[in-house]
Image (cartoon, rainbow, N blue to C red; front, side, top):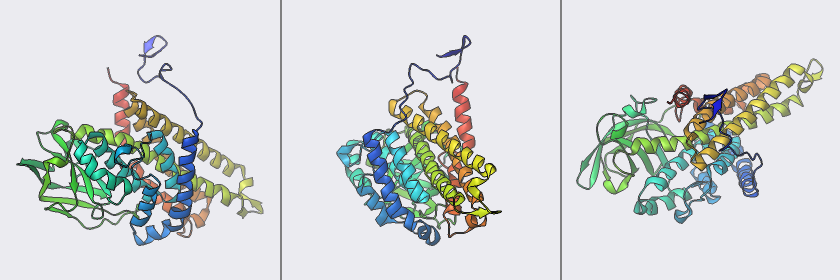
Length: 398
């Protein structure tokens, strides 16, 4: 354990394990360029309309999948791209700069597909993942319940074994893609109370006894549907179990480590686009006979935005590298990156809107949409208050 002034300090950087390379590889630059072009050509021109009309852009999602974005870190034998988490973080930043809401759905889809790839048996992988990687099939992730949000281990949806099936009863809340997706990676209780009684199931949308609540009316994320998922004696083949009985909570937490990196990257993408718009506006807009860019107070604001953005990106890349390397501190790094990047991302979007003045408040400009879409990032994949709990508990482990 590293020490500080002779005392053991578990949260100190261990320089024996730390490597630093801040330059993207040639392959990562290629992924970045492809994602940026796609975001600029396909996502950005349509984002306002998708938001205003609550359009779930399935055709464009499949175009993204054709570039490899439907199974970014799924293994190649089932159609995945087989990338590292750091590669994926680069991709999600670029996609989110075009349409944050749609990029965030792709993140959720990738998280669900990875759970099946990492923990599912071969027959399940071979049956579901080719369609998920092409996004001919779309995935949702169902952990949260009306009575179990931050306290995920208290979930009450129950799956009782009945012959070759599980029979589910209960409900899930705030499920992205619900009613439009084909596979729901769902956590349900098969045993006693607490985390060890939870099992992961890949539930297909045509399963008998599966239905949905009304579409939620949301502040943002309007290019993806959100609804409750309802189970009323819903029958799911036991062959659709992901991992072993009782492993569901561990699988969920493993998935969320990666999900937190992805949503951090989505916040960074929205913040970067907002900051770039603000810098452009400052170079054109005049007040009191001077360009906004000539006012030192506004220069300082832009400098702080850029500094926070860069810090958020570096923390996110460090967390992704730790997850790729199997670093024992990866969960803490992921929580730290998610907490910092989603808070900073929202604040940068808000500051960019302020720099636009009244124009930033209009839907003719993308600033208000970036603001609305990034606000939920501080809530989902574990609230930022829960991120603080995770970080503190890791620091205080004996």
